[in-house]
Image (tube, rainbow, N blue to C red):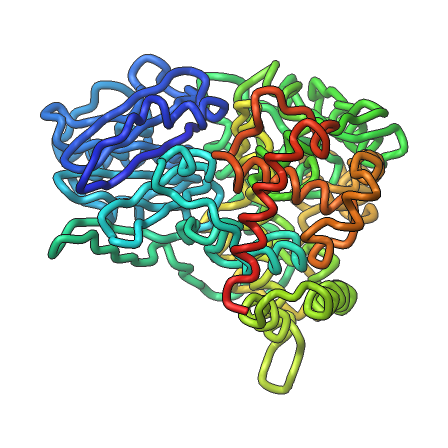
Length: 586
């Protein structure tokens, strides 16, 4: 797990050692830089495998090709054996070297063979290749200059903002999406000139006819097999696939712990660990009232885990909101990953979590009853359209997404909701929460449910839930480790979401943010028509001062409590830039 950043620039080189400092939290174990013909790569490394020989970027012996890897390749041992059978030798046992040797042997389509979570950069000659895993577990952002002479990429937006030429312009379309859904859609970010690389995409950048040409292709597309005859058989198959996945995900030179909420997803993960007895688990809550605490403790006792509850302080600080905005690179509240990662990181460098199970196996309440969620989205959109004065074009993508989610005689609503949660909410919100939240404390999160095999099986199942959900039958896989009574209680407990564990904390932070904004500021705030709630305006202001006025950072003397006093001039400059960008096109 690392942070990667780099460029393809025909005109100038860049100080990647300095730029990589923006990603120091992602890789505290060392920084490396490689430069080639018009390209450069830098990596901040969090070492989990082959500590001696896994330094990055990793280059060939002649220095003409190099790779940078953020993430983990779980089938690297299998790929290594295949390469060795062809006479290729290795100096160490890292997955990065497997990527490098595979790139030289098979070309950039090596990414088709990778099973894991990754964002990679591969450079050879004047060509640069970027790729992101099929689910989007690892982030990758990029920017292309208007004259197509330069491209920059990085694991986080704040790294791109260290390149002087990268603009900091708010995107009105993305802001509408963020205000309505709580995340952007597709490859869009809140900054107009910066995009995400889409999950499962290989991008090639090469100079041609005096400018950079960019091509993209998809890889690791689903391969659907026959649908299992019954939901029970589907659950059993998924259980076996998950057992194999967990075995690969706990492979590291450091302990790998488990986030255990006491729900079905994390309980099954913990029970399928061959080393579960004596391994460490954590549960997170903001008070003893949270049901996860009792369920997780019961599961941990049954499995013989060394279990620890993490209770957040009763009195959160405004600084938590500032930290959340910096980590998430968006006006979002603190998450379970962000508040718990420092404690987990004090014990280890990597943890398993159950993310992906609900998206793949139709486990969210929205899968069963989408109506209330769509009503809430549409109410937010209607309010923005009536008050914000944004150009009509800013609402088009949000309108199109909501139309796609509403049923009509030409549309299968269960499939539309399933696709939205899997392809929009999961990569743009849930996976970002785990990656950015945990990596702010240099903690790697591994997600064993997110494999191609489990995905392909899940996609073959019906989405209308008329024959039940395979999640309801995963208790069969738990029974072997937990016993039927406990497995049944876990499988049938009331469904809760990860944010529920911090509901009280979020409410207290909202009250603090509301109190921090002077009433005079709220009444004349230039963005109050977009964000009417004072606490949301406060978080938006934090984002604007960090990512519009500055390069993804706060002033050295920053204090959230002084946002409207000591930092007033910086904030007004950010407001002016934001308003210019938002009203452009009216």
